[in-house]
Length: 79
Length: 117
Image 1 (cartoon, chains in turn brown, yellow):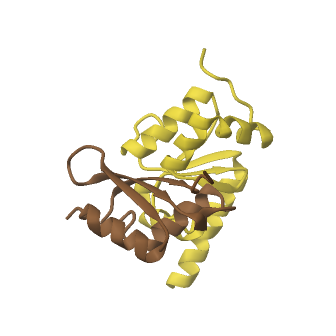
Image 2 (cartoon, each protein chain N blue to C red):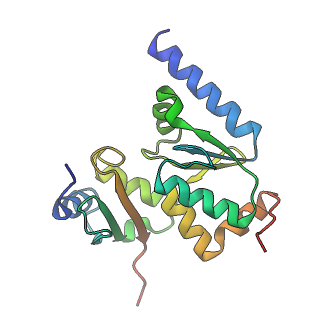
């Protein structure tokens, strides 16, 4: 049963409190989402480490319940 | 075989694979017949850059499919390895490709590329 986008956002925010999360339903089928996550906690980390942080926040659902979540991470631009 | 020795055997095999070939892609299906869109996307990137690589189909071996996730502490397939180092899954490889970082990374690791004309 695909996950509800709001649940994805709240899980990520629980794991990464300052995260700004945008979710996009890539194919409109409720099973292929894109998540764009911005957080200062990513600063100085490699992409692999940043993505790992998000996946850990999702508590093991990645690759299981969440078959297809395309991830993109970024550090807040200092404007 | 107890699960402990079983997972050691899988780790051993993974270690041999990623150290035995410069570029290794653990994927679903084969480079010619990828069985998942994400695996196919990485195959496409590597083929476009003309990077010789070894595709390993995790669908043929459930213990390898689970073992690779524990080995890299990364929960999804595909997984790209260059010179024994885990580079990323589909999202990261695609993002690196779009920014040009992948070409730089491969060159820095002495990987020969023959881009498609």
